[in-house]
Length: 163
Image (tube, rainbow, N blue to C red):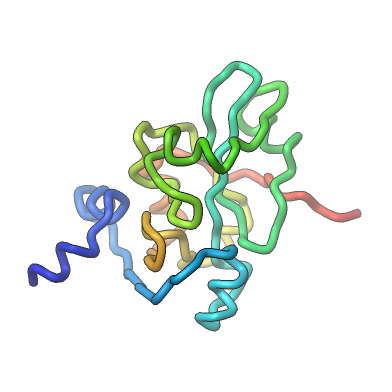
């Protein structure tokens, strides 16, 4: 049982505290390339595996966006979804300072502060999505409705659509 405690991350403790059902998957991760590489390595679908992006708005506030791993954040839609004129992704070197996580282990749950969170509306098509577990080599499988509920977030279309 003690070993189980070792793999608990802040994200998992928050889900436990809120009595939200989830599953954990751990895997070997020598080096993080990107979410697509990990999903391919584990044989997971791209459309229900979500990456976490953190942006800063013109006002100086931080925002969290969760989108499918093989999609691109539409900066205009993202800004509009959080009521900002514009947003810009934070630099990789600032991820830990702002979120408490490292690149590849960033998840919408359990950051240093709970920032406004927007999950792409495509998540609503699934009963379960995959997000980072809060450290490299760790994933959380959960209902997207629960993710939005526990982060106080919302669903909105925020991915770049090719015309």
